[in-house]
Length: 250
Image 1 (spheres, rainbow, N blue to C red):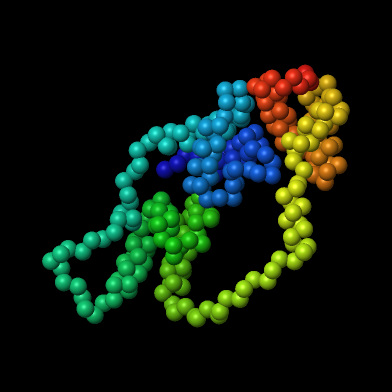
Image 2: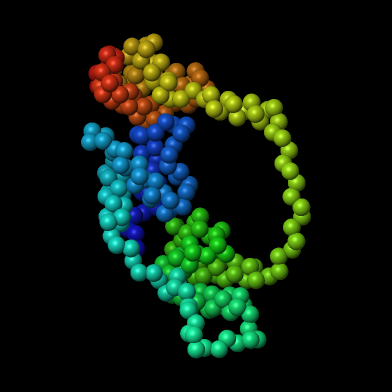
């Protein structure tokens, strides 16, 4: 069972987004499922360089993720194993196969006293798809079991015929304009570069301040952490490619 707290995992995702990617193009979706979030954080951590500074929490999370990755996969739980009927057994002609599967599933849920196994069942069966979003923070086995039984009961009821789908209306000019404006959004990296070019700040702190001012002028918001992150990227690029840019002192 994972020892990584979901809150720490999300904080690490936000920190790596700010450090490694553009503000308007974050590669890590903080609202994704816990498993997807772990995968993205682990992938992003491979982009870190030796001189990149990250918090102790982020270091601990990445270390734990790598340890989990190195651990051999656990054996499939009894809930994931499909029951294979014996060849010599005679099927009951009066029993429908689907009804048997649903009855077995209901019995398995009611008898299970391990929340990890219930969560594995939620992940492997689309009947419980709506529960996956909050699965990582669910700690109460009774609540999870009741929710699963309710969904299973709903799934067995007859589904009403769906009305014919209508073709969505074409996007209005206003929607298209908003979409175009979003694509042309002024990035914080551009704000930091413009601040360096036009204001020639003498320190990193003043550079952060000027970058925030430029960002506000273009309809953005002040954010010291994001501005500082983009500034560090500019400094790194300047050193690597020897751009001859005059970098302010710390």
